[in-house]
Image (cartoon, rainbow, N blue to C red; front, side, top):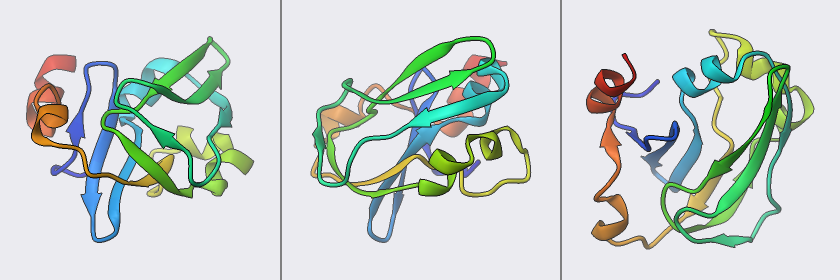
Length: 124
């Protein structure tokens, strides 16, 4: 995972890149779910507010909802994990992001996110 990502206490992350942000579940979150067998992602162009459910993930253990760490509009979907959700279980798989978004979120939306080192301390 990238040291520059910001994380939620519910194991979602947001990472700024050159075209906006990528959003997904942390490795720790994936590990807690167990073997992932299904991922449902939203359509392109959909707007989400911070805290809204944007995805569903099913594992052999349970199904869980995934929440937006910041508000934004979906600009790209990781079709690779929709078509092959088991890739998320592979430690060497690099592209574990779920969606990419454009966002004009203000600092208030970022205030409760943890930087990666604080997140790691919280989950250890």
